[in-house]
Length: 71
Figure (spheres, rainbow, N blue to C red):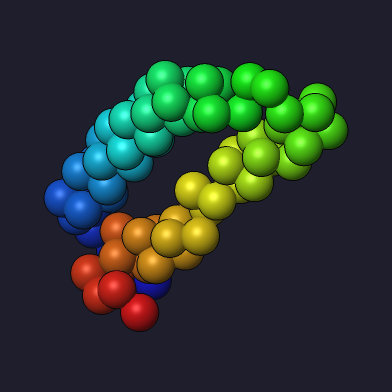
């Protein structure tokens, strides 16, 4: 249990927001031109996968924010 604030939490939150913004801009910029001619259901699957894939490294990142270790 943490008893005093640490610098990793605000830095981690800012890093997470910046990373998500960059990820969203890259996806919004490049993916539509790649999937434009695909069937709508396939496009939906692509966007669902891309919308969830950013969660994969989130657990380790949150652990780092809280403990200072990556695992």
